[in-house]
Image (tube, rainbow, N blue to C red):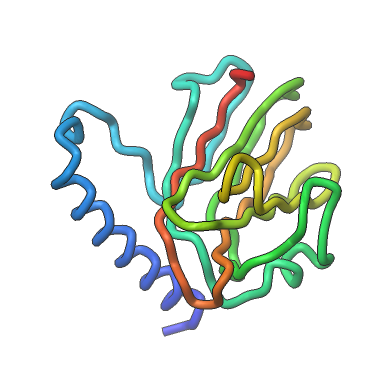
Length: 164
């Protein structure tokens, strides 16, 4: 089995285990729609629902600065470890004057985003988890969510919103 597929398999197994554990403690689980795992997103202005959420498992074996091809960007350092392939692809069908992407995880995570206009990294947006906010051009963005320790995987939710 290729290493990349093996890493995704481990991450998916950990995520499924986490979802089983958390769903037994969440009494509202039956009334909420569960966000997709490792999903790609295609949105335009005034998308719904807002915020739109997807889930995944952070981490991997590739250094963040290797994926970003630099140690830092104006939005933050390119730290942590990620998979070779992106966790999500975000297709924006229109220009956004304001869009916010934010990772929520019980552990400290990082993010790398490659898309029209460049590469952006972050590790501390709001507390211990990363995010990006600003003007976004239409096009395809690749998103990696990383962990600080190589081979450690943590569940996360990525929220995408137009709300300031």
